[in-house]
Length: 89
Image (cartoon, rainbow, N blue to C red; front, side, top):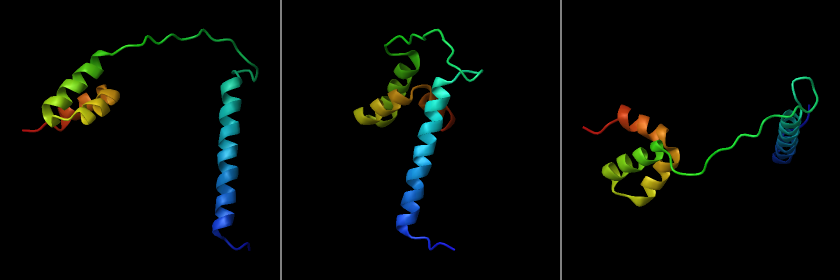
Protein backbone atom coordinates (compact mmCIF):
# COMPACT_ATOMS: atom_id res chain seq x y z
CA UNK A 1 0.00 0.00 0.00
CA UNK A 2 1.33 3.42 -0.93
CA UNK A 3 2.03 5.85 1.85
CA UNK A 4 -0.29 8.84 1.55
CA UNK A 5 1.73 12.01 1.86
CA UNK A 6 1.08 15.64 1.09
CA UNK A 7 3.11 15.29 -2.12
CA UNK A 8 0.98 12.30 -3.21
CA UNK A 9 -2.27 14.20 -2.57
CA UNK A 10 -1.04 17.28 -4.44
CA UNK A 11 0.01 15.13 -7.42
CA UNK A 12 -3.44 13.52 -7.55
CA UNK A 13 -5.16 16.92 -7.31
CA UNK A 14 -3.08 18.08 -10.27
CA UNK A 15 -4.16 15.11 -12.39
CA UNK A 16 -7.79 15.50 -11.29
CA UNK A 17 -7.79 19.18 -12.27
CA UNK A 18 -6.12 18.38 -15.58
CA UNK A 19 -8.67 15.64 -16.32
CA UNK A 20 -11.59 17.98 -15.53
CA UNK A 21 -10.11 20.64 -17.81
CA UNK A 22 -9.71 18.18 -20.66
CA UNK A 23 -13.30 16.90 -20.26
CA UNK A 24 -14.61 20.48 -20.23
CA UNK A 25 -12.60 21.28 -23.35
CA UNK A 26 -13.90 18.19 -25.15
CA UNK A 27 -17.51 18.85 -24.13
CA UNK A 28 -17.32 22.44 -25.41
CA UNK A 29 -16.05 21.41 -28.83
CA UNK A 30 -17.99 18.20 -29.46
CA UNK A 31 -21.58 18.18 -30.61
CA UNK A 32 -24.25 15.52 -30.02
CA UNK A 33 -22.86 13.26 -32.76
CA UNK A 34 -19.28 13.62 -31.56
CA UNK A 35 -18.38 16.26 -34.16
CA UNK A 36 -18.51 20.01 -34.18
CA UNK A 37 -21.99 21.44 -34.70
CA UNK A 38 -22.51 25.11 -35.61
CA UNK A 39 -24.78 26.94 -33.20
CA UNK A 40 -26.37 30.34 -33.53
CA UNK A 41 -24.38 32.90 -31.51
CA UNK A 42 -26.22 34.38 -28.55
CA UNK A 43 -26.13 38.13 -28.03
CA UNK A 44 -26.42 39.42 -24.49
CA UNK A 45 -27.11 43.12 -24.31
CA UNK A 46 -25.01 45.10 -21.87
CA UNK A 47 -26.75 47.21 -19.30
CA UNK A 48 -28.41 47.24 -15.94
CA UNK A 49 -31.46 45.07 -15.50
CA UNK A 50 -34.52 45.55 -13.35
CA UNK A 51 -33.30 42.95 -10.83
CA UNK A 52 -30.06 44.86 -10.34
CA UNK A 53 -31.85 48.15 -9.71
CA UNK A 54 -34.29 46.61 -7.23
CA UNK A 55 -31.46 44.78 -5.43
CA UNK A 56 -29.37 47.96 -5.09
CA UNK A 57 -32.33 49.97 -3.78
CA UNK A 58 -33.28 47.30 -1.24
CA UNK A 59 -29.65 46.86 -0.16
CA UNK A 60 -29.13 50.59 0.27
CA UNK A 61 -32.32 51.02 2.27
CA UNK A 62 -31.38 48.14 4.58
CA UNK A 63 -27.60 48.58 4.98
CA UNK A 64 -26.65 52.14 3.90
CA UNK A 65 -23.42 50.71 2.44
CA UNK A 66 -22.11 51.23 -1.09
CA UNK A 67 -20.03 48.04 -0.96
CA UNK A 68 -23.04 45.89 -0.02
CA UNK A 69 -25.15 47.65 -2.66
CA UNK A 70 -22.58 46.73 -5.34
CA UNK A 71 -22.36 43.12 -4.17
CA UNK A 72 -26.15 42.77 -4.01
CA UNK A 73 -26.49 44.47 -7.40
CA UNK A 74 -24.26 41.79 -8.90
CA UNK A 75 -26.43 39.10 -7.33
CA UNK A 76 -29.58 40.82 -8.63
CA UNK A 77 -32.75 38.76 -8.34
CA UNK A 78 -31.14 36.30 -5.91
CA UNK A 79 -30.76 39.08 -3.35
CA UNK A 80 -34.26 40.41 -4.04
CA UNK A 81 -35.75 36.99 -3.28
CA UNK A 82 -33.53 36.65 -0.20
CA UNK A 83 -34.63 40.08 1.05
CA UNK A 84 -38.29 39.16 0.58
CA UNK A 85 -37.93 35.88 2.45
CA UNK A 86 -35.79 37.21 5.30
CA UNK A 87 -37.18 40.72 5.62
CA UNK A 88 -36.37 42.79 8.70
CA UNK A 89 -39.41 43.52 10.79
